Image (tube, rainbow, N blue to C red; front, side):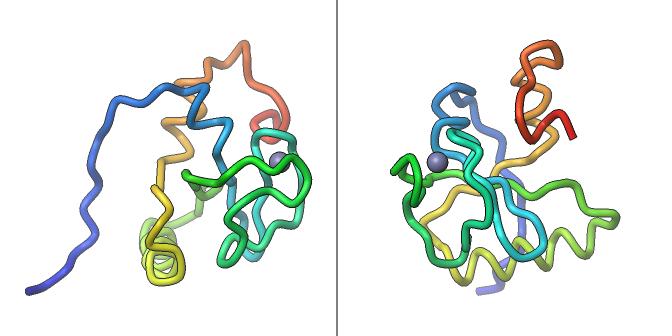
Length: 105
Ligand SMILES: [Zn+2]
């Protein structure tokens, strides 16, 4: 059996996703619910500040696809419990006029 990375599209409630979303950078992640910074996304199952449970994670846009795929592959090994969502999809679903916090940058 050969496992490959294949993206699956789902219909999700954007408010629910954002409440349980981690936005990952290179080394640490931010809680989208309370904007708490510096979360270790390889370990933390809930936000140390607002206590929300993390169920979804997305990566800030990477410059190249190969880099993004390898970051996701590494994350999958560490956090099989997390659902990986696409950052662009989150931004789009949030609506440009209602975008707050990290999405402003
Ligand atoms: Zn939080």
